[in-house]
Amino acid sequence: MSHIDKDNAPSLTLIRFANLLGALVIVIATEEGHRTSYRWHCTGCLTERLGRELRVNREEANTHAGTCRALPQPEPTT
Ligand SMILES: [Zn+2]
Image 1 (cartoon, protein in one colour):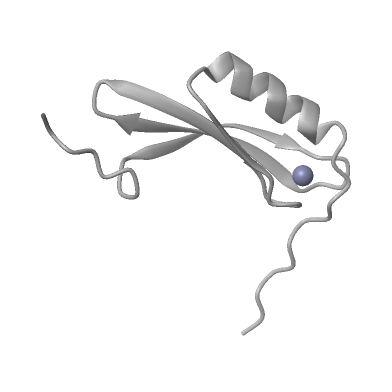
Image 2 (cartoon, protein in one colour):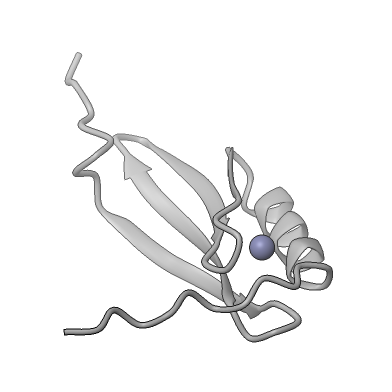
């Protein structure tokens, strides 16, 4: 049985929603061997949820985007 390194597993951004003030809420798929896990996170308030089903993640991310008022994170300055 092979070990899946979740920190280095290939991930793909599938869906991007904008919250009420423009911060992105992103649904991400990660390949874990024969399985794909899904998660979403809000780049405004930094909420994150894990799940196995794309449908559930999409609905939760969309619902969150419709209620979250967190501003986008500031751009790092150099
Ligand atoms: Zn949020």
